[in-house]
Image (cartoon, rainbow, N blue to C red; front, side, top):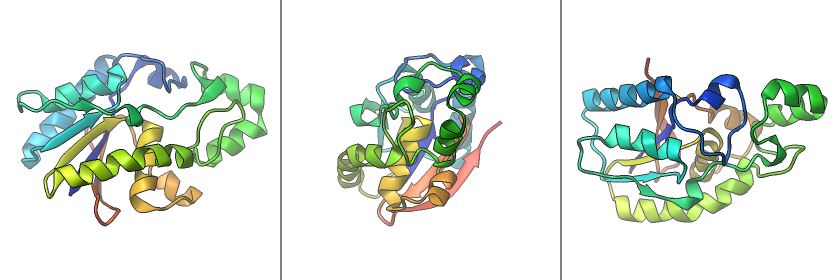
Length: 199
């Protein structure tokens, strides 16, 4: 089953480098354009989806609607695909956190979210546990068809941990995704087939 993992388009908080795990920040104009460019590239490739799931947050649902526009398919909301909880970092600028927490913040960033941050929250390893059940259900329901998931940076990393079984920092670093990138995974074999970006 080919699984297309999409990170939502850019928001103003992304542009400002502000943490936005559970805060429902909308797409900005660039984010809307990124989602439309992903749709155009998928159309160019002739990709059609049999199933689609989205995080409950508006920026992911909006991205999914743009990608699926005109297909007759709507993304069902999957609560487990909400972004990883960043605890007390929520809504704060990276530059301020670096100044306040110093080496502890640097060490956490270098952990590629495999550790819990110094202000609490989740790691991608604990988040991987909550996405395993929905992934199994998608694999059973999707058969051999294409499946779309639209979510967020860290929870998509957690999904890749769950798919691959890889929990080390070096692997986690390869699981990162920009707002304009699509990861294609073999959901049965647990390996990445391709990653591509759009302009």
